[in-house]
Length: 418
Image (cartoon, rainbow, N blue to C red; front, side, top):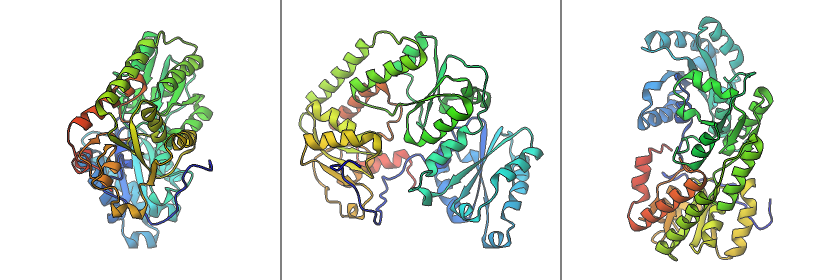
């Protein structure tokens, strides 16, 4: 780890109502023509059930609740085939993919899911079966729940001998807005951009295996992208959303090099992004800005962009400094020696040290901890990318600065389930 970057002690977490976002059930629901069977004790199912209701996907999930006797007797995994048969008989529309979700308990029991899925596939030949895990105790491992889920979702893709002029955006739960110039530029060059969230049919999703490149927009898709490169022959390019205009231009040139294409003249898009930053700064001035790691995946990079443009960056709330942000972290600490970098999950956060400070908060966590009335409604860079993303984010900063929306209101709107 870089010597100057903060390292946070491992201690009791304070999980505020602002913590969370896309739960595993909601992410899995992006799979087209799919259904979910959640196999778990009552308490574990409650979390997923609440999330399904809040995000209007409860019609895509059913539950097989197991009790202590099922676990102790070893009857647990034998219940699943009967439950699947009963479920399929009850559904009005037969799914093409059935994702069987299991909880932490299953990791301790060591169920042979490969054998179970093979048994189910023999009986229900028209359905693809995928095992998914909701196991928060693996958060600090190499394969936390979000990473494991991405691996499960893309595991149904099969190698294709045909390669088409298309690329996949992977890892971002919400698809990038088609207002982003990359869609226009790729389309003009004769290429298509895929995302699981916009695939209407399973056939369309399976065609992702014919793509020539995976753009990895989140670290959660790093493992699945490596597996797809090995098994499907699809190379990948790390492409986490960035609000640094120069970095965006560099990424676009890298895409050109990887695909052997030209995206044309980028200058007009670049100029609009730069003007958007300048305009936002002229309106917001030196009003204090706080950045939350749940709003953007590159909080330190964004802090550098804002500081260099004249914004008054006062605080960054994170849970760690990921490897791809260490250089940006060192830079911003050199530029702003008194910058506050706090652990958003530390139990001291419950003391609300920053309440009543005047500030513009980018993200719900920072907004909740400060009780600011100026909160940017953004989570995980949703829909933002490229030069368009810079313009849109600057518009969101101005809107939040000129209006009043509390974090509490936005948390309810976002449907966060802790």
